[in-house]
Image (tube, rainbow, N blue to C red):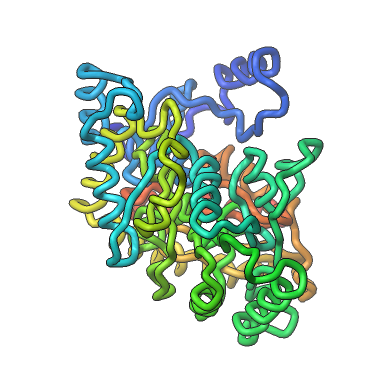
Length: 444
Ligand SMILES: *Cc1c(COP(=O)(O)O)cnc(C)c1O
């Protein structure tokens, strides 16, 4: 394992990274999202080693993927063994047991003690698309209800479900029909205050669906337990329960999009467990594969079995290498109690971020749960005006000091922290010191 310490020996990005960044412009579509231009050579645990020999603390985890840490030895071992056995046969053509083992794990670990089934796919967007297909097949209804600030992916259907036009949807329409958006229960920005947010947001949801869609036309309500790209928005207590009751009343499938929040990130195996609510379908991806691409839909057997035989699948879905990686990652989450570790990281992050908020009135809100924490940055005049420029400057200031942070949020003014769940506590402290330095520099 690479020593878990931040070491900055060149300017960041360093000269070799700068050379690669120059090449990127000639080789890669300019439309592909760009980050910090610091190119990776090697990674382990919570440390990225760049091509110039710098060691960075990774608070991005490849967008919440590397929860068990980069290149966890157990994952590497499992993938290596699988690759030398067989790499791909396609589960739909020549099946293998790893697919079944992973479905068994998903069925056992997702919330709900009813009978479940799973389907394995490649990406989060594909999982969300399939959850909608399943809900439509089960209900025989077309409509899907989603929320402001939602992020569900970049395919055609999931673009329609994603809220933010820039940069995800601009110029890419027409979008899939029968997707309806309602206001999100966003406590920090709820007009009448956070204490009224759950009831009022639910009333708004129910009224709009009644007036504009019709309950009988709704196949599914899809919501992230903590909204990811939209700004780590945590709905107020009770909001999920109200949605659950409404879905039960109207025969609507409740889908928890746990692509970012699932698999121990928030201190439970799934973030929705915290709400005391059991969804009908759960989508997983990101951390599920321990670094390899894989995704899943898991849920009630009668819903999962509703599509026509052959209606679900795909060439690479549940690829043997990804299944092996995922099974190893789940074993690591269990044996290293990474849910518990996420809670510890959350406590440390919260106390450090509270310190930051004490020094900088631009920190409008600290929110999140476990190792999925964020700060929303605003102008310090009490108006809560989003300050995206500050978020961008702070993230850049962290990068040049050797800490990878990500921004997010509909207004681009949220800095999110998604450290690997195995991150050593002294590295968290170091990263938080860097965040404070970058903040001080950015506010001048
Ligand atoms: C990342 C994400 C997706 C899309 O996953 P991809 O693997 O990028 O397609 C969907 N839903 C949520 C909540 C996500 O965070």
